[in-house]
Image (cartoon, rainbow, N blue to C red; front, side, top):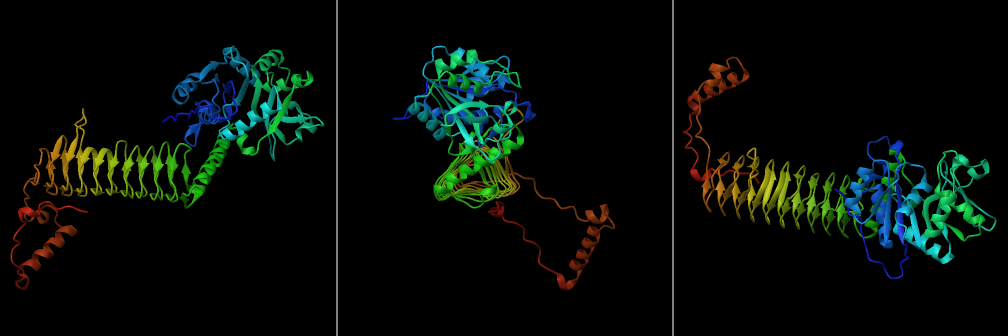
Length: 510
C-alpha cells in the first residue's frame, strides 16, 4: 500500500524554496531489477517517497520529478504518494545536468531558489534540507552544494575548496587527480540554486568528461570563475546524504533508517526489547509504555497504544492496537485490536477484523471482515469470516463460519452470550440469537432463535464387531478382542450407559 507523502503549510520562519526538483530518471542497473531503482522500498516508503517526504515540509510552490527509466511505473507511484508533483520526462539519460535542465524548462515561470535532489537518498531529513536552504539564503549564494565528510569517498565526487575554504569545483572520481581522490569531503548530490542562474549556467556546460554526460556538478566551476557567490555546506550527519545503488546498499540504508526510527521511539518511552530484530516503518507509530517484543514488525500505518504488548514474532500491517491489548506470534493485516483484547499465538487477522474490548482470538484462528464483541472469545482452531459476534460469546474449537457459496460471500450474525459448540459449521447467511447454544458437531443452516439449542447432526450408529470382521489380525482387532473378553468376565459387569441428556449437547471448549 502506498504511503501519502505528508504535506504541511509553510511554518513561520521556515526557509522558502520556489521549487523542488527530484532527479529520478536513472535506470539503476546495479539493482538488477525490473523495478525502477527509485521505487525500491524501505521503511514504509519507496526511495523516491522518502526524498519527497523530506522535502514536503519546505512547502515549495512546485515539485518537479524527472522520470525516464520505468517512467510509467514511477508516474503511477507519484499519483499515489505525491499527486501534486509534476512528472517531466527525460527521454535520454544524458546526465544530471541535462535532467535539471529538462526540469527547469518544464517550469519556465519559476523564479527564486530551487532545491535539487537525487531520488535515491532515503536518509535525507527535513532538518538537513532546511539547514541547507537557510545557509544558502544567509550567504547570499546563487549556488550552494550540500557536502559530507566520509571515511571512504570511493566513487563519489570530491569537493575542491580554495585556500579560504570556499568551494572551487566538484570533481567526479573518474575525472579526479590522485591528489583530489585523497579528499574526504564529497558531494551529497543536493543543491540550492537561483533558478535563473542555474538555467543560464546549465545551457553553457558541456559533456567533456569520462562519461560523456552533462554533469550538474559542472555548474559550480563557471560560477566561481565568474565571481558569483557560491557556498558548500557540510551535513551534520554523513548518513543523511547516502545514496542507494544496489541491493547491498539498500539493506544498509534500511538498517540505518530503522535504527533512527527505533531510537526515536525509545526516547519517547516505548520499550523495544531487542532493537536488532524489531522493524518499524516510518509511517507506523507506538505510544509511550507500549512494549515491542523481539521479532516484531510494525508496518504501514500501524499504531500501537500505551500499555499494549506486541510480539514476540508478530507482524502487523495497517493495524490499530489499542491500550492494554496484546498480540503474540501472529500476523495481522488491516485489523483493529480493541482495548485489553488478546490475539494469538499463531493467529491470522485479515482485513476488516475488529476486536472489542477484552475479546480474544486465540491459537490457530483466522478471521476476516469480522466484528468480535466485548469479552467474546474465539479461543482456538477456528475460522470466522464475514461475521458479527455480540458480547460475551464463546466460539468452541474447530468452528467454521462457512461464508462463501462459490459465487457470493454471505454474513453470519452471532448474538450476545451465545455458546457455539465445538466443531460447528455455521453456513451463512444465518443468525444465532442472543443466549442460544449450538450442539457440538452441528452443521447449522437455519437461524437459531434466542435461548434455543441448535442441533443439526445425524444420530450415532455403532456397527458391532466391524473391526473384528473387516480388520482381522490388526492391533486394533486384537485390542478390541481383549476388551470384549474383559467385558464378558463376571467381575467386570457394570450397569449400562444411561446415555447423554439433551441438554448436554452443546459441548464446547474455552
